[in-house]
Image 1 (cartoon, rainbow, N blue to C red):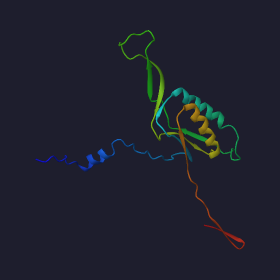
Image 2 (cartoon, one colour):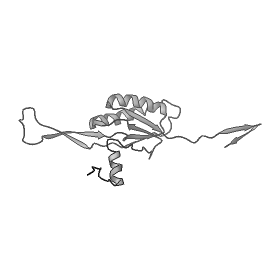
Image 3 (cartoon, one colour):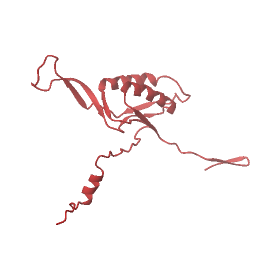
Image 4 (cartoon, helix red, strand yellow):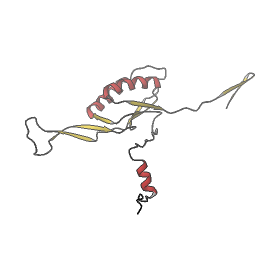
Amino acid sequence: MTFSPKIMSTRELRSFKRRGKKSFKKLNLIFGDSLIFFKKEGSVESIYFKFLKKFLKNFLKKKITKYSFLRKKIWFFIHSNFPLTKKSKNARMGKGKGGFVRWSVRVKQYSKLFETKNISSYQIKILIKKVQFRLNIKLGFLKKQKKIIKVVNYNKYSWYI
């Protein structure tokens, strides 16, 4: 009598091989030309996102570059999705969960924080440093590539390819 492993279907084999590995979520730009995303997962209280929106409003009013006359836009992709509850200090064990205190946001890895339009990469790098410090989660930056036009000079005329 030989002991051989159970014959698995291809679907079962695939799921067995993928066990323990995280799938990479592809980041796509929908509205703007640059994107800020979370590099690691974690949770942040929704109060910090209210402060973040207020901070961005003031930060984008400053004129740093020569292209500051363009209208700057921001699209947020994060919403509060997890309620936090707490029992009173003198309560004994049992007797329910406790009352609602505030909202929190649970963030997965590679989820979008916000997209921007008409903001220079220099401004965004400064912004990321400040926001990372406040939220205490690592952030990443993705920018849409522009088409490069190659200029070839022949004598006095220039040709665009």
